[in-house]
Amino acid sequence: MRKLVSRLQVTSRAFARSKRGNVAITFALAAIPLLGFIGAAIDYSAASAAKVDLQSALDSTALMLAREAASDSSSQLQTHASQYFTAVFRKPQASNVAITATYTSSGGSQVTVAGSASIATAFMSILGFPSLNISGSSTTKWGMSRLRVALVLDNTGSMAQYGKLSALKTATQNLLSQLQAAVTTNGDVYVSIIPFVKDVDLGAGNYAASWVDWTDWNSNNGTCSSGWGWGGTTKSTCSGTWTPANHNTWNGCVTDRGTSSAPSSGNYDTNVVAPSTAIVATLYAAEQYSSCPQAAMGLSYNWSAMNTLVNNMAANGNTNQAIGLQLGWMSLVGGGPFTAPAQDPNYTYSQIIILLTDGLNTQDRWYSDQGSIDARQQMTCNNIKAAGITLYTIQVNTDGDPTSTLLQNCASSTSDFFLLTSANQIVTTFNTIGTNLSKLYVAK
Image (cartoon, rainbow, N blue to C red; front, side, top):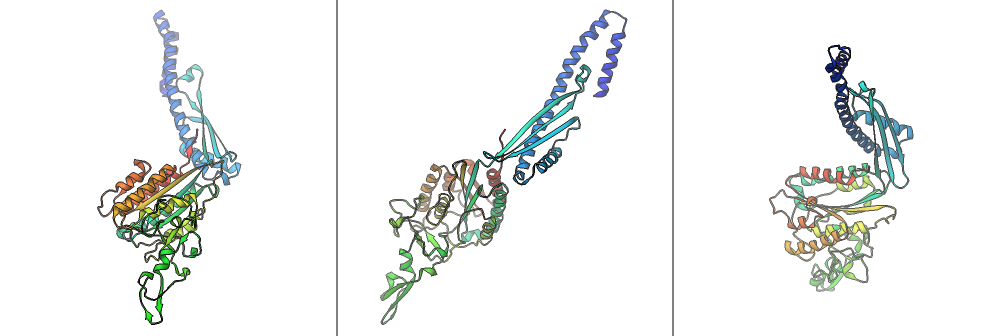
């Protein structure tokens, strides 16, 4: 390029010295502005391309700084900004590169990175413009929105096959790491974890809680005796005196809300009406289910405890997605077994439920046919979406089952339903969802 400019300069001087007629002089005079216009277009095009690269580097730098800005001093923030920017903005024709970074926490945390540089010209230097200046800025905002995520995870017996439970543990722990990395202040992100089978374990230590309905449990757990001997294993089969077991022997499992014979008229198995002792159907029915899963955890930012819970998950029991989903929703809004931290009116909140299952529904409190259970769950899904909660559904189909119409219809959108055919896809899918949830955005 510089050789071409040099040759043009020599040619221009030759035209100026020429004595062969006015044609040469006229051409030389006309060529100068023509070359200037062409050269300016080329130089401006090169500067525009450099500006695009500058802006991209500023965006990347702002996103990188957002992860550490709250803990950096001003000098550290500036040093790291220069390091990040230099690593991605590589333009040898750029000079006088200047980068400034600022962090503010009032009105929501944000990092602003501004940059400028001079781009050497090839043609316009002839006209006395040796360089063109470019500049830009990028602001990454976070902290004005907060995230609450409920993980509703299948722990049924079939999850032991094909490495699915192991993959789920890895995927969930990776997701927790992603969410934790997006946090600048405790409470920015809360997560609840609801392992489910036919039942959900709400913690054996809650045997004195007012939200537990003991009606069925008392009839099915105890001893039968009489003055003449023993008989019967439940209250209905006892021919003598039935004595319910002590509630402190409960294993923590509950089944769907409603009455013992059918869902109640209030459809409490499909909504989040707070449990009340005045309406027994709103309480969670205790059950001594032999395949009780790992105990659920309400909204928390105790990342260590969450990882321990996930690591302790085991596969056993039948499939009832519906109870896991209802309790996942309850964990977000609070009530009964869960306490949801109050929402600060100065922030906006995004509420997410991620439901993963590897099988179709097989058993709930009342039914053992898929269609009846699916109908109850679809009501829950509709209610969740009407409440403005984003619902991701994931079907891990390693057994050639039909694609779940229920899970497709439950998802908030077609892109929020994932059909997987191998265990390792659980990890990549959770990573995709985690990236969507934890990703900071370039505001301007």
